[in-house]
Amino acid sequence: MKHPIPAAKTLGLSVAICLGLGSLSGLAVRGRNLTWYAQLAKPTFTPPSFLFGPVWTVLYVLMGIALALIWQRREGNQALLLLFAVQLLLNLAWSPIFFYYQRIGLALITLILLLLSIIACIALAWRHKDITLLLAPYLLWVSFAGILNASIFILNF
Image 1 (tube, rainbow, N blue to C red):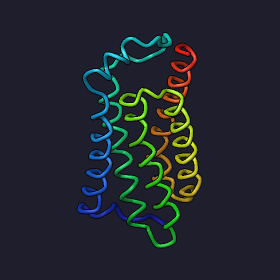
Image 2 (cartoon, one colour):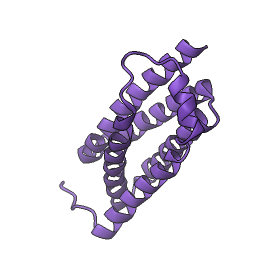
Image 3 (spheres, rainbow, N blue to C red):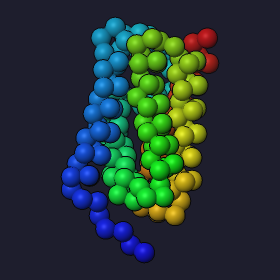
Image 4 (cartoon, rainbow, N blue to C red):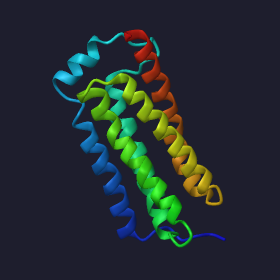
């Protein structure tokens, strides 16, 4: 059965939540933290820094749309809504752990937990193909980020 597109208010609020929390997390990536990051040994497949902002913006919008759909279908989806909140909090935690506190190993553990929570979200949402498709690029990017984080950890310790 087809579900209607979420109401504009729910959609706007959901996207704003994801973008807003993502922006808060991004505050950790500033000043001395960028100098520290620039000095780290990084793998050859590290994307240029200017790419991260636009990619995360698109991902946060997709996550916001997924959240709106989850919220709209919340009856019977309480576990999915809770799991989405957990992965969003783990996402929010990663940048400060990595950039501000400069704890590459702890950031990797956080990222692994984030990855597992995204996989769990997709598994719980499996009957809603639109939600799973919206979260798929996020899963791929976080998987890549995990490989990048692990590589930086190995190269610097």
